[in-house]
Amino acid sequence: MRYVESGSWYEGLYPDKAPVIPAARSFSCIHDGGARSCVLLAHGYAGYPGELVSPALALYQAGFDCHVPRLPGMGTSGEDFINTSSDDWLGLVDHALADLERRYERVFLLGHSMGCLLCVIAQTGHRCDGMVLAMPAFLIPSLDGDAMRELSRHRKDVPASWSQDLRYHLHYENAPCDDPVLGREYYSHVYPAQLYQMSLLSTRARAAMEHLAVPTLILASHSDAVVDGDACARYADVAHVVYIEGATHFVFYDIDPGCERRALDETVSFLSRLG
Image (cartoon, rainbow, N blue to C red):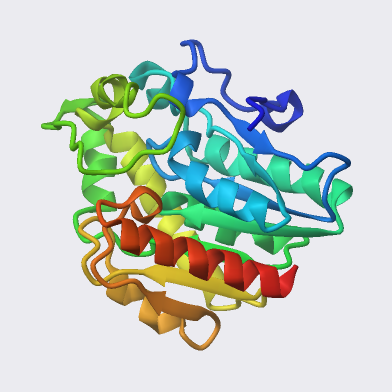
């Protein structure tokens, strides 16, 4: 793993002010001499690259170069997050894809949660040879976009209850040492404007899925407490949908190691057949 952040990918986007929390550092896994195929991995809302260590390493071992950038405003501070929008998050994925499609013969995407929305939208304007969408945020039962838009006119930040759950098997370096810091900056708050931005991404991604022409694997779970796993079934005619029963939303560092292993196996098998 090389902790690198490609400056060109962030040009014109919100420049974060706070230092990057170690778990949130952008990283790449690159073979000596490079590989013919790469995977761009996109983390989710208020997430960070360290959440995607396990799929990046599994795909690297399968022969892919992997690039896991940090989305603007995430993994630094809540104040940075407040100053970003979906234009920044989508802009990062768009810039990264534009760069990678020039450097590799085949380019694949892997998204988690909101990262899936970014992948689905961004691939419409680029060469993409396949996607894996893990626990996509096509429908979030608890999210009322209109209510968040109205609340954002009065409040930038609403305190929320959060406590660390040590049952999850985080894989970033020195895990889970950064979880309390991330919790203080992100998970202990509701950011109405940013949630509204995510609801807009959901709408755009659902529209893009109706015309999907890229080989796609969707990983979902009926026990996902964050997004509606049943919403993925509607895309069974354009994507291969696999339900990992018992998995949580955070399947790549799941409480159940068996669910995590199945998600990794499905991911590697699917992309290896394509690339």
